[in-house]
Amino acid sequence: MSAESTTPAPEILARALAEDFWRRAADHDAAGSFPTQNFDDLRTAGLLSLNVPSQWGGAGLGPEAGKPLELWKVTRAIAFGDPATAQSFHVHANEIDIILGLGTPQQHAMFLEPVVDRGVIFGGYGSQLADSTPTIARRRDGGWVLDGKKFFCTNCEAAGAALVWALVEGDEDPSDRIQVFCVSHDNPGLRIQRGWWEQFQGMRSTGSHVVQLDRLELDESAALGKPGDYLRLGLQARAYCQFAASFVGIADRLLHESCKSVAFRKLTDDASAIARIGNSRLHLDAAWGLVERAAQAYQRGEPDAPVRANMARYFAEQAVRVGLENALDNIGTFAGSAASGMPKLARDIHLYIRHESRDRILRTIGAAQLDLRVDTNFSGDNPILKGLSKHEHSPSHR
View 1 (tube, helix red, strand yellow):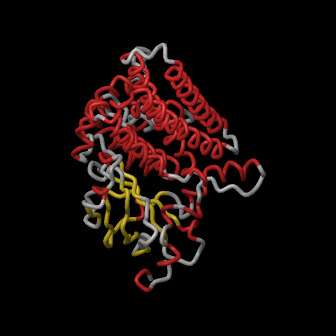
View 2 (view 1 turned 90 degrees about the vertical axis):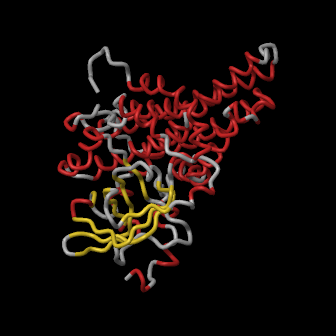
View 3 (view 1 turned 120 degrees about the horizontal axis):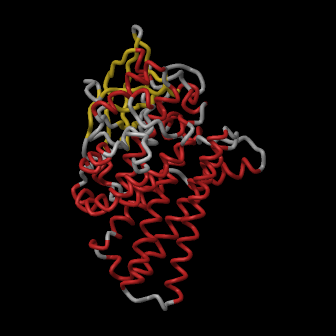
């Protein structure tokens, strides 16, 4: 992307695409299909390489470049068009940030140049279910072998590569054994299992199927950083700002549709309808203010930046919850029509906001206020560690 002053800001480019995303969203939702055309548009606009460093051909924005807000503004603009596309974009962008945060310069070139040269999309495969076997990484002959099953594997339908989280075999604290690997999707040990994701009624077009890893062999260059670095460096907490940005974009869409309906239904003399607009706007702006404050904290290297990220994540969800109720009341019975876009949007919201427990987030914020031990990554509840107590010492994983 050119740095010339005549080039529109990335958020302007994303906002220009948002209405097309909104129009396509219903079809992708109905079919459960990945929004390939949306990603083609993002690629053409140079937005898929937004946080790739300039020396590898990207725009050089994002958290690792000290410019987090510029990336989060783009996520917000995409979410205004379609939450599922925003989720897929933000997973892709987050994986780039993790490669930059954990990888060596050689790994940066190896894994990020294809994003610019071939438009490669990254997937993110971290989650386990509570009753599933953790994904285990074993050292073998100067490399690694991974075995396990991952759930909620966003972008797996379209990814050319993915980051995979696994537990290194051993007896140390599990949080200190989490290792991140970059895996090519043409690896014969990686297999997508369809069917499980189809039961979900929201965010259907993110392509978040199950991925099976069967004796997946990797060389040493696939390992990003050392075991435990991902949580130790706070990279998971920083990603909450991407969720917050998506939620603000959704709240923005809800306010937009609410205002349209007030005008269409001639409710400009209805005090309650106008109050709902004001309530939504207040929550929207307050949530974005917390995102901006978190960005500032990361730029300045403030120690409470991860707590700020949790605050932004929490209140952005509040803005969505409030915005949804206000929009439904202002739109009225037409909100039940598929043509309004609201049923699909409501389903997306109800799934999307479950990604992290609000009580855990509030617990983190409260602990920080009381100067107690703060776990901004929720290591004890981390989805990567689900099922650990049940399966960690089973013979099949030794």
